[in-house]
Structures are given as structure tokens and as C-alpha cells.
Amino acid sequence: MSNKTTDWKKHFINEGFHNVAWVPISPSLTLDKYKQWLAEGLNAGMSYLERHIQEKENPELLLKDVQGAFVLTYNYYPHPEPQNKSQLKIAKYARGEDYHFWLNKKIENVLKKIREESGGNYLSFTDSRPILERDLAYRAGLGWIGKNTCLIEQNTGSFFFIAGALTDQIFKDKIEIHPNRCGTCTACLDACPTNALVEPYKLDARKCISYWTIEAKKSPSPDLAKSFDGWHFGCDICQDVCPWNQKAFGKEIHNVESEKSELAWILRASNSKLIHHFKSTPLNRTSPYGHRRNAIIAIANKNYVELKDLVEKHSESEKLRDLVSWALSSLR
Image (cartoon, rainbow, N blue to C red; front, side, top):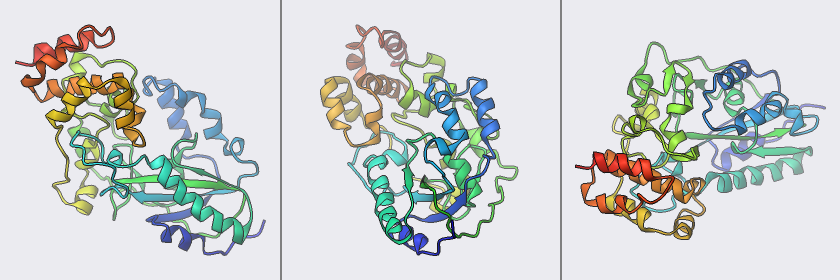
């Protein structure tokens, strides 16, 4: 297949993507470390990460005759698709419409043009497919994988989505691997309140606030929950303290605090109301039980004693009973 010389990069930039590259498919640089991470059980309850290992090892299982991938970043701070003015303490990427919808639409808009110009087959991804996106982005020269395990770029920090598209076509691009610029800095490891960053470049999801507030199907232990600092969905701590983000956005990176009235509403709302309220946002990934669990932990973390009666009303829930007992003992 001959090299393509279309304006593919210009198309992606015009659609709002910030850093764009094409990288040929080659053996992953991080797959062995990823397998070791899984072997150590550091993926917590996320068993799907193990089930998809074959596709991550061999992208041709996703797209026949795959030659390479467009790799893209799209900044999410400030959020490009704001959804509401919620004061819940949630990760920056989740403060708007679910990126799986609008970001994928942008990719498909560009792929339509590229198909018309170059032909070929393409498979877009926005982290919902079994692809090692950070590995691709690193090999494409879009940044380095930092000690907090996030991809970092020296001019834009790390508050961006990684997305792209596999293709069976070959495109021209100049690739320069981005040097690791973490140096001796350990700000992210030092700041993590649950010590989830067990060592540089290694995250233990079993201790991670993001895992417990998004993916977990049960409640954390009181010893862990007491360190969640009011986060309701996700966590930005290891990114907020990163000098590269502070250089890009200033040292006082905005973080809202959990609003009492919203936490109270979550504990009063029915399952259907919670599902409807968070529909089309990333927060819909968490179940109604998960939102109540997270609200109870945040109320205990912030010592919102005036919401104690609302917390107590959930003591009859089998899944929340122990958490409620801990929260009530903390509210004084």
C-alpha cells in the first residue's frame, strides 16, 4: 500500500483535536508491564481488563490488515462540552457530556473525509475498545507516561482525552519519541491520600479513589474511605499537583467542593431519578447504589453533621449498612 499524502492531520486539527499523529502498528512497549500489573491483581475488580488482553496484544483482531493508527488528544479542561453546573466534587473530564458520544462523533466526521480521499477501513476508539491508547500515544510522540501513569505533554499537561482510529492504510508522519520529563519529582506519589501510587509508574487500583467511586460494585473499608477527601466521581489529585499541569493552568487549578444540597438530593432521590439526572454524562457509569455510597462517604469526609439523619435512613440497605454505621460514627 502506498503512503497517503492527504490533509488528514489538518482535518483533525480543524475538528478541534490538539495533538495529532499517525503511528505504524508495532509491538507494544508497555504490554509486558501491563501483563505484570494484571498478574499482581492491581486491576482490582476490573476483570474486563484481563479478558481483552488478546486484542490489546494483536490489534488485527479488531481490524483486519491493520497498518497503523491515528492517535489524537483533545483537551478537557476547561470542559469543551459542559453539561451542568453541578458542585459535586468530580474529575474534570466528567464535568460535561459523556465524551464517548461527542468525541467519537468528531473522529467519525474526519474519517468520513479521509475515506473519501484515501479509501480504506477505519475503526475509531475513545477508550471503549481494548486498545492500549497510552502506549500508542507515547509511540506517536504525543507525550510521556508519567509517574502518576497519565500521559503528560510538556505544553498542555495531562488534562486531555486520548482517542484515535485504527486503519489498514499507511500515512506519512514524522515521529519523535517524547523524552520523559518527570525527573526526580514525586509530587503525585506524595499527594495521593490513599497511597494508590505504590511506586513511580505503578498504580494499585485497589486503593484508588477513582476506582472506588466509579468502577467498584461494593463499598471501601472505613480506613480507605476516610481518605477520599469528598470526591464523588473520580479524582484529579495526582494531576492537579503535577508541575506540568500547574505550568499549563496555574498552581491554583480549580476544584469545586461537594455541595451539601446535591449530596442530600442524591440520598433522597429514587433510582430512576438518579439515572435520569446523570444520563448522557460520565457519571451515569456509576449505579444509583454507587452514587449513594459516594455521597455518604463525602458527607462523612466533610463532616456535614446536618445531613446525619439522611445518612441514617440508608442503614436498612444491606449493601450500605456497614458504610452508614462508619459514617454515623464519623459525624459528630
